[in-house]
Image (cartoon, rainbow, N blue to C red; front, top):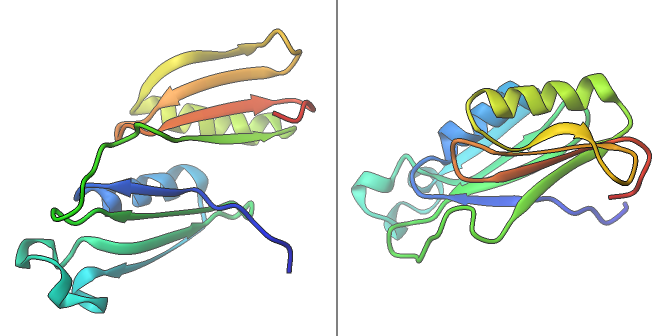
Length: 139
């Protein structure tokens, strides 16, 4: 089996909402485990239904993981990660861009970039920055 790189996003009480939104845009199967199911003594009573782990496998084979950071852990949303989706399927990637930008903030409109591809950036409603590159350049 080849080595894969899977982005893993952290949230504070919004992991389920975020991962379900990502599934609505990317499609696929979402698996979840709550703290209450796996480690009930590790969090407060209010955090039992928060996600200890979530994994989305899209219909295109993309894998995105995420979880809620317990209140006992330090947390700063979106400060050190961007998720990049790139490829040559213009319709698929434009659909993802449109889906994320509908409820997010466009940081860079999807347009022709200096390197010849189309590029755009969106900060979603959860603070995660998504980059989109459509073309043949390895970005």
